[in-house]
Length: 141
Image (cartoon, rainbow, N blue to C red; front, top):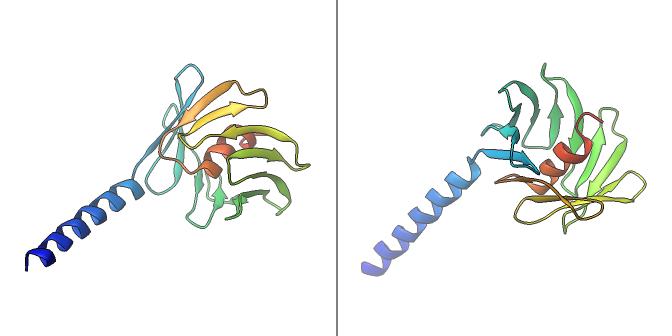
């Protein structure tokens, strides 16, 4: 009976942790620490004024302010524009590449973003590396 309660307790803790991590909001900051974006629980991305600038759906679809599809982030890290053409890719180690494969920068595991020369250009807490790469290297380009 005690073993069963012990397992139930850890299962409950795991569920609570997984739920809170999945619902965590993210703050995206530039190199000086100023907030440039905030993501809501539903994937909505807001600028520092709180205005919705885009939304990234669970399936990787990127939508503009009016909800129109403007791109896609594939599971393998490929970033596509509205017409489906490849804009770049985020490798498994966080390296960000442009459409020709040249290195643009890197998103480290802790969310630190570095440019091509390795200089720190920002940080995103609790945000998928692919989404972070899109915001820093492909959004509004």
